Image 1 (cartoon, rainbow, N blue to C red):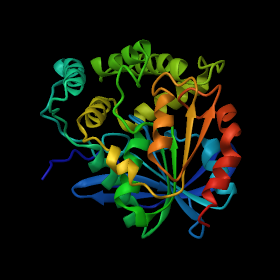
Image 2 (cartoon, rainbow, N blue to C red):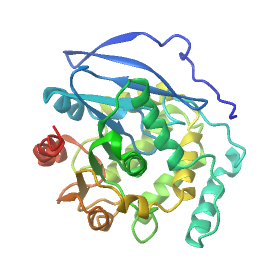
Image 3 (tube, rainbow, N blue to C red):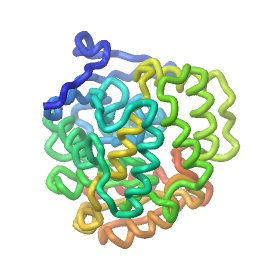
Image 4 (cartoon, rainbow, N blue to C red):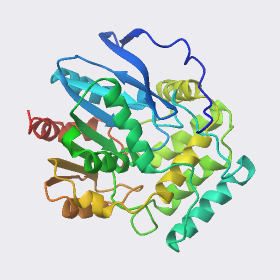
Length: 334
Protein backbone atom coordinates (compact mmCIF):
# COMPACT_ATOMS: atom_id res chain seq x y z
CA UNK A 1 0.00 0.00 0.00
CA UNK A 2 1.23 3.45 -0.84
CA UNK A 3 2.16 5.78 1.98
CA UNK A 4 0.21 8.97 1.28
CA UNK A 5 1.10 12.46 2.44
CA UNK A 6 -2.24 14.15 3.11
CA UNK A 7 -2.49 17.85 2.32
CA UNK A 8 -3.22 20.40 5.01
CA UNK A 9 -6.88 21.15 5.66
CA UNK A 10 -7.95 17.56 4.81
CA UNK A 11 -9.10 16.93 8.35
CA UNK A 12 -11.40 19.95 8.42
CA UNK A 13 -12.86 20.29 4.93
CA UNK A 14 -15.85 17.93 4.94
CA UNK A 15 -18.69 20.42 4.90
CA UNK A 16 -20.69 22.42 2.39
CA UNK A 17 -18.83 25.52 1.23
CA UNK A 18 -20.70 28.57 -0.02
CA UNK A 19 -18.76 30.92 -2.26
CA UNK A 20 -19.27 34.29 -3.96
CA UNK A 21 -17.61 34.79 -7.33
CA UNK A 22 -17.70 38.06 -9.29
CA UNK A 23 -20.83 39.12 -7.40
CA UNK A 24 -22.70 36.08 -8.74
CA UNK A 25 -24.07 33.78 -6.08
CA UNK A 26 -23.77 30.06 -6.57
CA UNK A 27 -23.13 27.18 -4.20
CA UNK A 28 -21.09 24.04 -4.46
CA UNK A 29 -20.17 21.05 -2.36
CA UNK A 30 -16.60 19.95 -1.86
CA UNK A 31 -15.44 16.62 -0.55
CA UNK A 32 -13.06 13.70 -0.85
CA UNK A 33 -13.46 10.52 -2.88
CA UNK A 34 -11.26 7.52 -2.11
CA UNK A 35 -9.39 5.91 -4.98
CA UNK A 36 -7.73 2.97 -3.29
CA UNK A 37 -5.55 4.62 -0.65
CA UNK A 38 -5.64 8.02 -2.33
CA UNK A 39 -7.81 11.00 -1.45
CA UNK A 40 -9.19 12.73 -4.54
CA UNK A 41 -10.57 16.18 -3.78
CA UNK A 42 -13.60 17.25 -5.79
CA UNK A 43 -16.09 20.08 -6.22
CA UNK A 44 -19.71 19.50 -7.26
CA UNK A 45 -21.43 22.65 -8.53
CA UNK A 46 -24.87 21.03 -8.69
CA UNK A 47 -27.77 21.24 -9.15
CA UNK A 48 -28.54 17.66 -8.15
CA UNK A 49 -31.16 17.35 -10.88
CA UNK A 50 -28.83 18.73 -13.56
CA UNK A 51 -27.08 16.58 -16.17
CA UNK A 52 -23.76 15.58 -14.55
CA UNK A 53 -20.62 16.43 -16.52
CA UNK A 54 -17.20 15.41 -15.21
CA UNK A 55 -14.39 17.79 -16.22
CA UNK A 56 -10.90 16.24 -16.29
CA UNK A 57 -8.04 18.69 -15.88
CA UNK A 58 -4.69 18.80 -17.70
CA UNK A 59 -1.17 18.37 -16.35
CA UNK A 60 -0.53 20.38 -13.21
CA UNK A 61 -4.02 21.91 -13.31
CA UNK A 62 -6.25 22.18 -10.24
CA UNK A 63 -10.02 22.16 -10.00
CA UNK A 64 -9.98 25.91 -9.34
CA UNK A 65 -8.26 26.45 -12.69
CA UNK A 66 -11.34 25.60 -14.75
CA UNK A 67 -12.39 28.88 -16.43
CA UNK A 68 -15.41 30.48 -14.83
CA UNK A 69 -17.01 31.16 -18.21
CA UNK A 70 -17.16 27.40 -18.89
CA UNK A 71 -18.65 26.55 -15.48
CA UNK A 72 -21.21 29.37 -15.82
CA UNK A 73 -22.20 28.24 -19.31
CA UNK A 74 -22.82 24.68 -18.13
CA UNK A 75 -24.84 25.84 -15.11
CA UNK A 76 -26.92 28.20 -17.23
CA UNK A 77 -27.84 25.27 -19.47
CA UNK A 78 -28.95 22.97 -16.64
CA UNK A 79 -25.79 20.87 -16.39
CA UNK A 80 -24.09 19.79 -13.18
CA UNK A 81 -20.33 20.48 -13.49
CA UNK A 82 -18.11 18.27 -11.35
CA UNK A 83 -14.40 19.03 -11.16
CA UNK A 84 -11.56 17.49 -9.19
CA UNK A 85 -7.85 17.69 -8.45
CA UNK A 86 -5.90 14.94 -10.16
CA UNK A 87 -3.57 13.02 -7.85
CA UNK A 88 -0.42 15.05 -7.16
CA UNK A 89 -2.20 18.40 -7.57
CA UNK A 90 -4.26 20.75 -5.44
CA UNK A 91 -5.69 19.14 -2.31
CA UNK A 92 -5.58 15.56 -3.60
CA UNK A 93 -3.01 13.11 -2.28
CA UNK A 94 0.65 13.46 -3.17
CA UNK A 95 2.49 10.32 -4.24
CA UNK A 96 5.81 9.69 -2.47
CA UNK A 97 8.41 8.94 -5.11
CA UNK A 98 11.56 6.89 -5.08
CA UNK A 99 11.94 7.00 -8.86
CA UNK A 100 13.84 10.30 -8.85
CA UNK A 101 15.08 12.98 -6.51
CA UNK A 102 14.83 16.74 -6.79
CA UNK A 103 18.41 17.30 -7.87
CA UNK A 104 18.11 14.65 -10.58
CA UNK A 105 14.47 14.98 -11.57
CA UNK A 106 14.94 17.04 -14.74
CA UNK A 107 17.58 14.62 -16.04
CA UNK A 108 15.24 11.73 -15.24
CA UNK A 109 12.40 13.24 -17.27
CA UNK A 110 14.71 13.94 -20.21
CA UNK A 111 16.02 10.40 -19.94
CA UNK A 112 12.47 9.06 -19.95
CA UNK A 113 11.73 11.00 -23.14
CA UNK A 114 14.73 9.28 -24.76
CA UNK A 115 13.61 5.88 -23.46
CA UNK A 116 10.13 6.56 -24.83
CA UNK A 117 11.48 7.26 -28.32
CA UNK A 118 13.56 4.07 -28.14
CA UNK A 119 10.49 2.11 -26.94
CA UNK A 120 12.27 1.15 -23.73
CA UNK A 121 10.48 0.65 -20.37
CA UNK A 122 9.92 3.82 -18.36
CA UNK A 123 9.74 3.93 -14.58
CA UNK A 124 6.75 5.96 -13.44
CA UNK A 125 5.02 6.13 -10.06
CA UNK A 126 1.61 5.62 -11.68
CA UNK A 127 -0.07 5.56 -15.07
CA UNK A 128 -2.87 7.39 -16.85
CA UNK A 129 -4.99 4.28 -16.25
CA UNK A 130 -4.57 4.81 -12.51
CA UNK A 131 -5.60 8.44 -12.94
CA UNK A 132 -8.71 7.37 -14.87
CA UNK A 133 -9.79 5.28 -11.88
CA UNK A 134 -9.44 8.41 -9.73
CA UNK A 135 -12.04 10.18 -11.86
CA UNK A 136 -14.43 7.24 -11.74
CA UNK A 137 -14.06 7.20 -7.95
CA UNK A 138 -15.48 10.75 -7.86
CA UNK A 139 -18.57 9.61 -9.77
CA UNK A 140 -18.89 6.63 -7.42
CA UNK A 141 -18.66 8.90 -4.37
CA UNK A 142 -21.50 11.04 -5.74
CA UNK A 143 -23.58 7.98 -6.71
CA UNK A 144 -23.59 9.04 -10.37
CA UNK A 145 -24.01 6.06 -12.64
CA UNK A 146 -23.68 7.94 -15.94
CA UNK A 147 -22.17 11.31 -16.86
CA UNK A 148 -20.91 13.44 -19.72
CA UNK A 149 -17.10 13.34 -19.77
CA UNK A 150 -14.98 16.31 -20.90
CA UNK A 151 -11.19 16.22 -20.84
CA UNK A 152 -8.61 18.82 -21.80
CA UNK A 153 -4.97 18.11 -22.76
CA UNK A 154 -3.64 15.40 -20.38
CA UNK A 155 -7.18 15.28 -18.98
CA UNK A 156 -8.30 14.23 -22.44
CA UNK A 157 -5.81 11.35 -22.36
CA UNK A 158 -7.16 10.26 -18.98
CA UNK A 159 -10.73 10.67 -20.19
CA UNK A 160 -10.05 8.45 -23.22
CA UNK A 161 -9.29 5.62 -20.81
CA UNK A 162 -12.38 6.39 -18.71
CA UNK A 163 -14.71 6.40 -21.70
CA UNK A 164 -13.24 3.28 -23.31
CA UNK A 165 -13.02 1.31 -20.05
CA UNK A 166 -16.40 2.41 -18.67
CA UNK A 167 -18.69 2.92 -21.69
CA UNK A 168 -21.75 2.33 -19.54
CA UNK A 169 -20.81 5.35 -17.41
CA UNK A 170 -20.52 7.72 -20.40
CA UNK A 171 -23.30 9.84 -21.94
CA UNK A 172 -21.14 11.91 -24.29
CA UNK A 173 -17.44 12.52 -24.66
CA UNK A 174 -15.69 15.84 -25.37
CA UNK A 175 -11.96 16.05 -26.15
CA UNK A 176 -10.23 19.45 -26.16
CA UNK A 177 -6.58 20.03 -27.11
CA UNK A 178 -5.67 16.40 -26.61
CA UNK A 179 -4.07 13.41 -28.32
CA UNK A 180 -4.30 9.64 -28.58
CA UNK A 181 -0.51 9.35 -28.71
CA UNK A 182 2.22 10.30 -26.28
CA UNK A 183 3.50 13.75 -27.31
CA UNK A 184 6.75 13.62 -29.27
CA UNK A 185 8.83 16.03 -31.40
CA UNK A 186 6.60 15.07 -34.31
CA UNK A 187 3.20 15.70 -32.74
CA UNK A 188 3.93 17.47 -29.46
CA UNK A 189 5.39 20.71 -28.08
CA UNK A 190 7.46 23.12 -30.09
CA UNK A 191 11.06 23.40 -28.97
CA UNK A 192 10.34 26.64 -27.10
CA UNK A 193 7.32 25.25 -25.25
CA UNK A 194 9.19 22.03 -24.44
CA UNK A 195 12.02 24.07 -22.90
CA UNK A 196 9.56 26.08 -20.78
CA UNK A 197 7.96 22.86 -19.52
CA UNK A 198 11.36 21.36 -18.73
CA UNK A 199 12.29 24.55 -16.86
CA UNK A 200 9.30 23.94 -14.60
CA UNK A 201 10.72 20.58 -13.56
CA UNK A 202 14.16 21.94 -12.66
CA UNK A 203 13.27 23.79 -9.47
CA UNK A 204 9.95 22.67 -7.96
CA UNK A 205 10.55 24.73 -4.81
CA UNK A 206 10.77 28.12 -6.51
CA UNK A 207 9.34 31.25 -4.91
CA UNK A 208 5.82 32.37 -5.77
CA UNK A 209 7.17 35.23 -7.87
CA UNK A 210 9.42 32.86 -9.82
CA UNK A 211 6.56 30.45 -10.45
CA UNK A 212 4.20 33.25 -11.52
CA UNK A 213 6.83 34.50 -13.97
CA UNK A 214 7.32 30.97 -15.30
CA UNK A 215 3.55 30.49 -15.69
CA UNK A 216 3.26 33.80 -17.50
CA UNK A 217 5.90 32.69 -20.02
CA UNK A 218 4.16 29.36 -20.63
CA UNK A 219 0.68 30.88 -20.93
CA UNK A 220 1.99 33.50 -23.35
CA UNK A 221 3.21 30.72 -25.62
CA UNK A 222 0.21 28.37 -25.42
CA UNK A 223 -2.63 30.87 -24.87
CA UNK A 224 -4.71 33.15 -27.05
CA UNK A 225 -2.62 35.85 -28.65
CA UNK A 226 -3.15 39.42 -27.50
CA UNK A 227 -4.34 38.74 -23.95
CA UNK A 228 -2.43 40.81 -21.38
CA UNK A 229 -1.01 38.59 -18.64
CA UNK A 230 0.91 41.34 -16.87
CA UNK A 231 -2.03 42.02 -14.58
CA UNK A 232 -2.78 41.80 -10.89
CA UNK A 233 -5.58 39.32 -11.70
CA UNK A 234 -3.17 36.89 -13.39
CA UNK A 235 -0.71 37.19 -10.50
CA UNK A 236 -3.49 36.60 -7.97
CA UNK A 237 -4.91 33.58 -9.82
CA UNK A 238 -1.54 31.86 -10.14
CA UNK A 239 -0.42 32.66 -6.60
CA UNK A 240 -3.77 31.40 -5.24
CA UNK A 241 -3.23 28.10 -7.05
CA UNK A 242 0.29 27.84 -5.65
CA UNK A 243 -0.84 28.57 -2.10
CA UNK A 244 -3.71 26.08 -2.38
CA UNK A 245 -1.58 23.29 -3.80
CA UNK A 246 1.54 23.93 -1.77
CA UNK A 247 4.98 24.96 -2.95
CA UNK A 248 6.08 21.41 -3.78
CA UNK A 249 5.66 21.16 -7.55
CA UNK A 250 7.17 17.68 -7.96
CA UNK A 251 3.74 16.30 -8.91
CA UNK A 252 4.06 17.97 -12.30
CA UNK A 253 7.09 15.79 -13.08
CA UNK A 254 5.35 12.62 -11.86
CA UNK A 255 2.33 13.38 -14.04
CA UNK A 256 4.64 13.94 -17.00
CA UNK A 257 6.28 10.58 -16.31
CA UNK A 258 2.81 9.01 -16.14
CA UNK A 259 2.13 10.24 -19.67
CA UNK A 260 5.45 8.84 -20.92
CA UNK A 261 5.18 5.59 -18.99
CA UNK A 262 1.59 4.63 -19.82
CA UNK A 263 0.75 1.89 -22.28
CA UNK A 264 -0.25 2.70 -25.84
CA UNK A 265 -4.01 3.40 -25.80
CA UNK A 266 -4.75 3.42 -29.54
CA UNK A 267 -6.85 0.25 -29.33
CA UNK A 268 -8.80 1.71 -26.41
CA UNK A 269 -9.47 4.90 -28.35
CA UNK A 270 -10.65 2.88 -31.34
CA UNK A 271 -13.19 1.14 -29.11
CA UNK A 272 -14.90 4.38 -28.03
CA UNK A 273 -18.53 4.35 -29.13
CA UNK A 274 -19.93 7.33 -27.21
CA UNK A 275 -20.93 10.45 -29.19
CA UNK A 276 -17.63 12.37 -29.28
CA UNK A 277 -16.78 15.99 -30.01
CA UNK A 278 -13.14 16.83 -30.76
CA UNK A 279 -12.08 20.48 -30.44
CA UNK A 280 -8.57 21.63 -31.29
CA UNK A 281 -6.68 24.80 -32.08
CA UNK A 282 -5.11 25.16 -35.49
CA UNK A 283 -2.17 26.95 -33.87
CA UNK A 284 -1.72 24.69 -30.82
CA UNK A 285 2.03 24.74 -30.00
CA UNK A 286 1.75 22.09 -27.25
CA UNK A 287 -0.21 19.32 -28.98
CA UNK A 288 -0.15 19.77 -32.75
CA UNK A 289 -3.44 19.87 -34.66
CA UNK A 290 -2.56 16.67 -36.52
CA UNK A 291 -3.48 14.86 -33.30
CA UNK A 292 -7.11 15.99 -33.65
CA UNK A 293 -7.32 14.57 -37.17
CA UNK A 294 -5.96 11.27 -35.94
CA UNK A 295 -8.46 11.17 -33.07
CA UNK A 296 -11.26 11.90 -35.50
CA UNK A 297 -10.15 8.98 -37.66
CA UNK A 298 -9.81 6.60 -34.71
CA UNK A 299 -13.17 7.41 -33.07
CA UNK A 300 -15.88 6.51 -35.57
CA UNK A 301 -18.58 8.35 -33.62
CA UNK A 302 -16.67 11.63 -33.49
CA UNK A 303 -17.19 15.10 -34.92
CA UNK A 304 -14.26 17.51 -35.16
CA UNK A 305 -14.05 21.30 -34.89
CA UNK A 306 -10.80 23.13 -35.66
CA UNK A 307 -10.59 26.70 -34.31
CA UNK A 308 -8.33 28.88 -36.47
CA UNK A 309 -7.09 31.30 -33.79
CA UNK A 310 -7.13 28.86 -30.88
CA UNK A 311 -3.87 27.64 -29.40
CA UNK A 312 -4.00 25.31 -26.38
CA UNK A 313 -6.23 27.09 -23.86
CA UNK A 314 -9.95 27.92 -23.72
CA UNK A 315 -10.15 31.67 -23.22
CA UNK A 316 -13.53 33.45 -23.74
CA UNK A 317 -12.83 34.41 -27.40
CA UNK A 318 -12.07 30.75 -28.11
CA UNK A 319 -14.97 29.29 -26.12
CA UNK A 320 -17.45 31.62 -27.82
CA UNK A 321 -16.58 29.99 -31.14
CA UNK A 322 -17.64 26.47 -30.15
CA UNK A 323 -19.93 26.74 -27.10
CA UNK A 324 -23.14 26.31 -29.13
CA UNK A 325 -21.67 23.24 -30.84
CA UNK A 326 -20.74 21.91 -27.42
CA UNK A 327 -24.27 22.47 -26.14
CA UNK A 328 -25.79 20.67 -29.11
CA UNK A 329 -23.36 17.81 -28.59
CA UNK A 330 -24.14 17.50 -24.87
CA UNK A 331 -27.84 17.27 -25.67
CA UNK A 332 -27.24 14.25 -27.92
CA UNK A 333 -28.25 11.71 -25.29
CA UNK A 334 -30.64 13.89 -23.30
